[in-house]
Amino acid sequence: MKSILTLLLGALLVLTSTGSSQEAPAKKKKMAPMNASSDVVAGKIYVVTPATSRFTVRLENPLVTATATNKVVAFFLADGAKITIAGAEGKLDGLQKGMKVRVMPSAADVSKASEIEATAADPAAKSEATE
Image 1 (cartoon, one colour):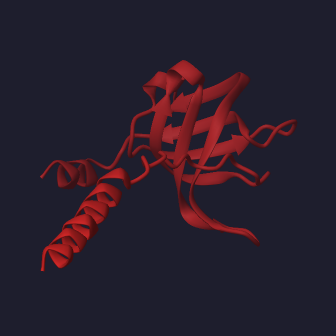
Image 2: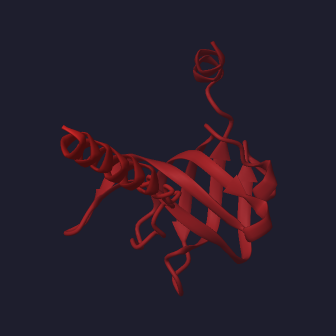
Image 3: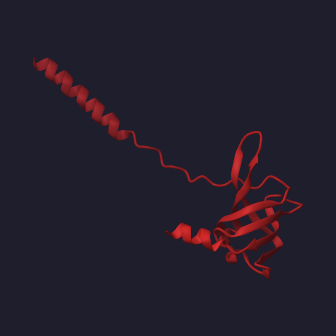
């Protein structure tokens, strides 16, 4: 009887020690892939990071490749890029989430935006997001 109790206690110790040492791995933040198409990109601003001159666009039409379907693509701002917001000259930090944009990739590097045309976000969509 004593040996059975010792065996059960040993098994319980093994189970509890292995269970606590197995922690879930930290989730990596998934980053949007860089643009790989030379076509004009249309969609809505998703994230703007002025410190790195990087922004992401949620596409109107997902970009389908042989390996993936991308609903969001990222761009860096090319040197000398032209940004217009509601018809007026603007800056990268003037772009806000939800604004409709058309992005023209640079001919030299499609992951860089040479021209961005943005219009104000739809006020109806903005009020729905805050409710």
